[in-house]
Image (cartoon, rainbow, N blue to C red; front, side, top):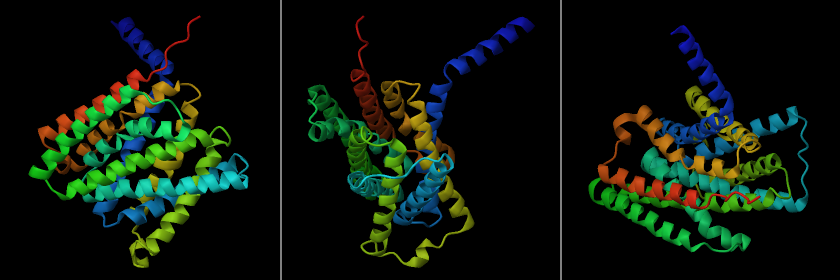
Length: 315
């Protein structure tokens, strides 16, 4: 029995060693899923969506800049690259604002389910930006996702809270913007270092969201005065969920195929809903119809990722 126990422990250690990068990938996805939980905590504490994004981007930019200075990575970029990355940063800032606003108007579960449509938006937007051939199977997938969305909206509109409809619209808008900047980055990364791209995108987004907050946002300076607890949550959001998660994500790509990474990322809404249920309990519990619609949406996205897998090359 002792030998059997030893063999079992040895087997577990070997499995952990073999799949350590896959475990690290899912840990990173769990961190991304935790973003919504932090956002909801900040919302409950009284912070609005735009100040949250301002702090997230500033903290994310400062921590990433410090990291690059520590590793002595050059932060020089040409004028063309600077223009492109700063512009993309505006898109990212708007994406984050729409995401946190959706959480503010509803809950984490609703925001994350509709954010998961990013992959399908990518399928439709990518051919336009990169002139890639359109895949008509993805049109069918899009129709099925719309059916899932209709099931959720119908249930929420008639049985829950009509304000949630605005949250769904913002979450879908956020997903669309996420698809746009992901495709732009897939082009930029061929010309510039990924860390450099992120550094200037977050910087550009920080400037844009700060200007917007004090002009069209109609916020008072007093709304940016935060408590110690809020600062701690914002620091985790900006450093761990932004800078750290990005750096780990890039590192993992060296050891795991892009297809596996992209397929695994589709698990984020599932992780996020589980985390939200753990932290917020009954406030996150939705109706049976919501979960049926969510299953249709997430299931279709996973199926789409499966169909898009790379076929092995013939020897």
